[in-house]
Amino acid sequence: MVYDCKVGIKANKNKQFTGHTNQGFGCGITFSPDGQFVCSGDAKGKVWFWDWKTQKNYRTIQAHEGVCIDVDWHPLDSSRVVTCGWDGTVKMWD
Picture 1 (cartoon, rainbow, N blue to C red):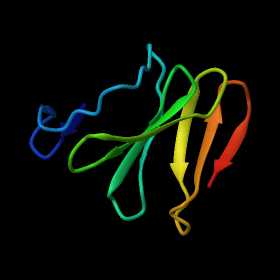
Picture 2: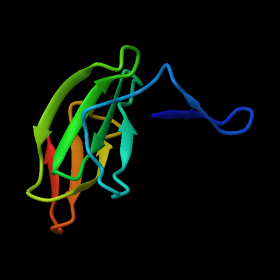
Picture 3: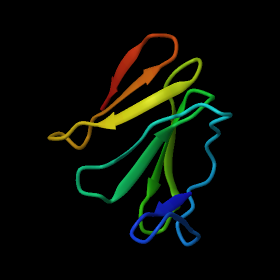
């Protein structure tokens, strides 16, 4: 779910990204450098990629055995994403 913080804090019901599970974990999210995609880790070790405008799932990859707690896009090379899991591993995806 996306929240609008311009005037108070309220849910933007037109922007919902579904499919991933967080099960209470604070999984990080990130935007692609061009702002076209948003991605998030999840409690099952997956990384979810959505199109920002349509909210449709573009791709899902199994990144870690356990929780994928954070994900970040490379700031200069938009074909690379880095993930980290609760198992202590950091992976770069191309």
